[in-house]
Amino acid sequence: MFNKILIANRGEIALRIIRTCKEMSINTVAVYSTADKESLHVRFADEAVCIGPPSSAESYLSIPKIMAAVEITNADAVHPGYGFLAENADFAEICTEYGIKFIGPSPQMIRMMGDKITAKDTMIKAGVPVVPGSDGLIKSVKSGQDIAKNIGYPVILKATAGGGGKGMRIVWKEEEFEEQWEKARIEAKASFANDGIYVEKFIEEPRHIEFQIIGDQKGKVIHLSERDCSIQRRHQKLVEECPSPFMDKSLRTKMGKAAIKAGKAINYEGVGTVEFLVDKYKKFYFMEMNTRIQVEHPVTEEVIDHDLIKEQIKVAAGEPLIGGNYIPNVHAIECRINAEDPFNDFRPSPGRISSFHSPKGHGVRVDTHVYAGYTIPPYYDSLIAKLICRAQTREECITKMERALDEFIVEGVKTTVPFHKRLMRDKSFREGDFHTGFLNDFDLSEE
Ligand code: MV4
Image (tube, rainbow, N blue to C red):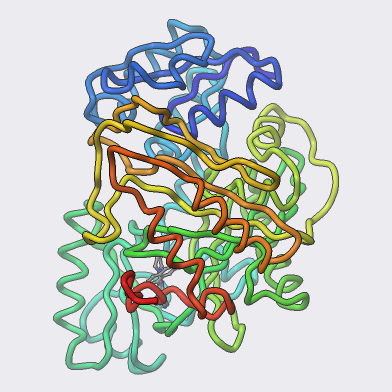
């Protein structure tokens, strides 16, 4: 097992990782920017190293700064959390070259899954269903149009270096193809320095259902069931739950098998997420694979009653997986509490939290790094807490969430709490009747 893990992250996830390390008797090193010197991850880690000014580029995203902190503290492993360097193949490679275990998959795996065409191609070869589309990059307007005509409009253009919704364009008819193609290329070039574009059939009103998988170094891969992440706004997830209200036994068996196939195809090591789009006929398609621990991992933890960070560290240290796949028999929902104003286009609301009280009670979990008197810096993401409720049924879970949201007191900044209260009361949400476009025509003021 590792002696000392450096956590290359901040906020709630840094704290979350430190907690598990303590329980595993592993020493911890926090890194922090000058904006985070009062943070709890700095206080609770065994050691802390300041790695630079507030700007992420000069601190949490700076590989030289992180490697210097690894070197002076003599850490033998790095946990990247999510975001920042978590899916940076170069960083994973440098760690490996220095003899430091990067807690995650190999650089080659990160690279393969980071290139969306390569990922899709790998899945096709493994027999995992994918959305019909171009075989690789589109080489010209004409060939793109031919492919689009063949698969039928509407189609969607995606950047091979993209993911998470960036650089996507929907094309409804052939006349619009060229214009959208040009726009997609310019956007992709500017965002990813790679203008490679591919085309797919546009799946209308899909659900986003992802499977949590975990693989060990001996080639065993299991799944820990799904999370429904369809409630999102501009590709930012707001609510995640398990099981998906859309799931049934037969669909879970099929999707679970596909998720494991996806993991085995690349000899996956560590925790990962296989994202699928599911259409209204319950046909499902591989979309992307995330090679990191995700924000919404507590939903799975609550349902299967296991610490996923602990499992992640254990497989990274070479321990074999025990047990098989999991079928959920309780319900969990996570609401992301962001310092944003839901009545003002979810505009970020950084600043000092003057008063903070988090909900408690049976089946209520709050993962947070904030406290009364804490100042949310404007430089990073706006997540301030994850409120996770667990109950026997979805109905009871929603009721518990409403109770918990009513207990949540955050003063000094605007939060997404009012949004979640309104959503929990929503008839369609309560009936499980939603898809990824649900929030496009959701009116907060409406009852
Ligand atoms: C799609 C799609 C419809 N058809 N692909 C968005 C994020 C990126 N991972 C892929 N995304 C989508 N790909 C096809 N062929 C619709 C989306 C999509 C979406 C997917 C998941 C969650 C929210 C979404 C919001 C808008 C569009």
